Length: 220
Image (tube, rainbow, N blue to C red):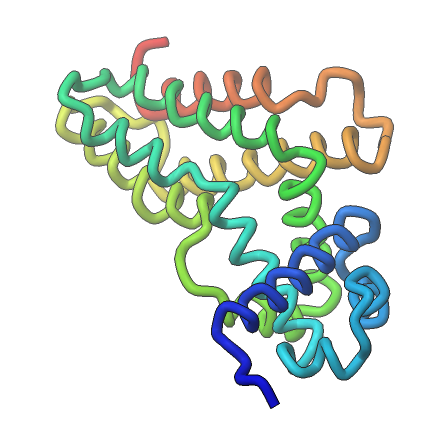
């Protein structure tokens, strides 16, 4: 029997993950079944289970791949490390420009799947935790919450800006606003929900940036 190489294993796993990703684009994630993935790959049931123990493990790898493609971390890091220091106000606008760029690019694919995962987390929290728990690395929004925002608040403190609310309240507002923008844009684009013709990421993120600058005592 020929020896199975690591390259062979990785190629097969990629085939399975790519197939699962395509299915997730067509169906809500919580409705995707292992049989859907099997049919998409063209492999036998045994051929799938040779590489993955269950659907949740496959979905974990789908999300891990999405995080590599939906990544604001490198661009935001370049902003913070740039030789030419941006003002607080410029930094806020730049960060949310990056978010708008990525959301516009991936609204019909990665953003749609992220939204579906949020619904799954509400309806089946244990299953969602099983999927998310096996993923290494930090999501873009996780980075925004734990690194980018604290850096912005630190800069406000250094500039002696007078915050118009507590930092934790501003952070919660940003999180809620981001989630709302994501949800409304996806419902409009992917599910044709009647949320209004103006649910576009960029103008909404521009308004959010202005709101953050105001709340942090900056000058718009």
